[in-house]
Image (cartoon, rainbow, N blue to C red; front, side, top):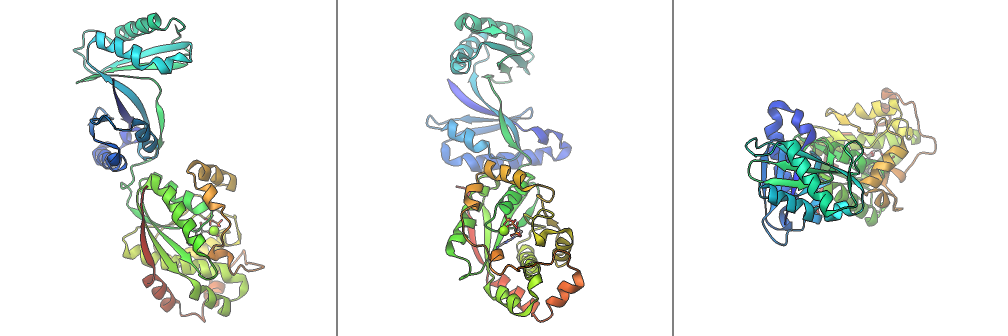
Length: 391
Ligand code: ATP
Ligand code: MG
């Protein structure tokens, strides 16, 4: 029996003229994700992408696991490929579906016949396959209204495919169809989720992390690596820029009013991230901020942060509650890494009474004593680059 994978690429079907481009990016991404599992052939036709292993050892289970993290796939199925004759179809259905049908009672068969020269119509195919399954597995009965499983037979141009359950895909758009953005990543719960959400919309990620040794530890940098490693399983490789931030934080501590520490720091992060983003051709910045979550994320505070950025700043979590964010963090398996207890630079010089309703003029005045341009360009130049690979 030859097992293959059929991909149904949902939202892409809506994209009109762009569809061909989107599909070809998706195919490229799939090839990259599966290349080390053995040889296989990918073909596209009738809005289905078919992955057909040509290697005995091709690990279909692992392929299915990885495909569940490829954006642009709405749903996919494992299927058995067979010759286009009723004899072959009936035999394959009985053999291949044994496991799927053993634990259930009610099923139905649906058939799709894109090859109109096939001698039986779709209802006839369904009837024959249903009959064969009932004979082979007498515990079953047909229930077309409330089946526990639906068996699908697809008769296509070159072969017939038989399968049961659809597997839900990661959805979204293929990474690489939406341009590139720079994610500001802390070691917290929110920013990895924010990156994942943008990748889901087809955007390639670079990332910037601000580290303040010796106030922050090597473990907190490791945590960022591990978090991006998890996000990269969905987004593909991520270029990480680690920026030395100690000097800037000390200067802020020594020269600015305490109530504005975090906000001034946040503005430096934006400026530096933007500098690197422009250098690396990123078209936007991404943060994990959500309105009202902490003092530096009130609407007015976010306005003060935005004022130093000229690139668009995307905040995909802006309207989400923490518990909603945590559900996603668990889903993408970043949560357990995020809650490791290491200091982030944000927690280093936290003001006791942060200003929650800052004005732009107040914040700008607080930065008067700092040589902003020199600090920003030095930090951006000294950023250390590493590529975080997908597996
Ligand atoms: P998170 O869980 O993302 O850390 P948080 O609730 O701790 O969020 P803050 O610490 O206020 O929020 O940070 C807000 C946003 O600023 C983060 O989501 C991230 O995008 C960015 N940020 C914070 N600290 C850093 C850092 N050390 N390096 C890069 N970006 C950072
Ligand atoms: Mg944080």
